[in-house]
Amino acid sequence: LAKTTQPISMDSYEGQEVNITCSHNNIATNDYITWYQQFPSQGPRFIIQGYKTKVTNEVASLFIPADRKSSTLSLPRVSLSDTAVYYCLLFTLFTSGTYKYIFGTGTRLKVLA
Amino acid sequence: DGGITQSPKYLFRKEGQNVTLSCEQNLNHDAMYWYRQDPGQGLRLIYYSQIVNDFQKGDIAEGYSVSREKKESFPLTVTSAQKNPTAFYLCASSIWWETKDTQYFGPGTRLTVL
Image 1 (cartoon, rainbow over the protein chains, first blue to last red):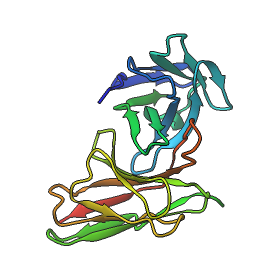
Image 2 (tube, rainbow over the protein chains, first blue to last red):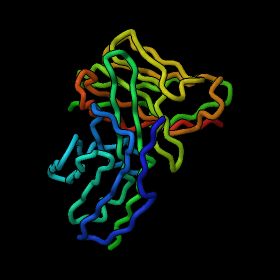
Image 3 (cartoon, helix red, strand yellow):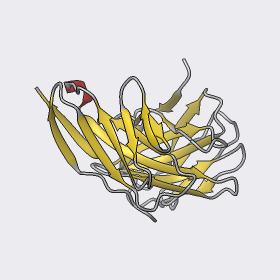
Image 4 (cartoon, chains in turn red, purple):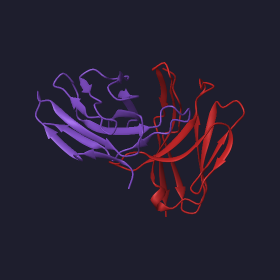
């Protein structure tokens, strides 16, 4: 099973921009890249999804280079409440009934005051 | 409100007993999934279902069973054959026929085997 690679942990200060990168060398043509945020003892929460180039929503941006072998989640001006674990996910459910999923091991972000 | 509910939030069972975890969604999603998460670890897929009355094994299906009799419901049974059942269990759903296939997760059930 192909794997993704994320940094295990990161520290940042309030108000700073945080960039978390996920490497996925074996990404397939049909794969979309999705990022989730998870707080302790809660289900992951969808943050953003993209296929290529740049996607932005009200909470984050996602940068994907042309070769799509990595993706970078960018959180602008983080606050203490952004302290959580962030996962990247590649999942493709094929019409044949087979599937492929790659769930990153997660990056534990700690935001300091 | 639309969403996914899981019950109970905490569950305790004695070794050797089967236990069933509930998962319900009102998002009208076709696909539903069960994941297991161990402390400090990522998520591992147990079972998934694309449509009613059909489901497929994931990476760690041994010791688990599921059913999909209704579109809204996808209960997971942890059987006594599961060697290390203590974990955090997460249910998710998605519109599988879209290539984007964004999964939305429930709040999870923490199972502890005594």
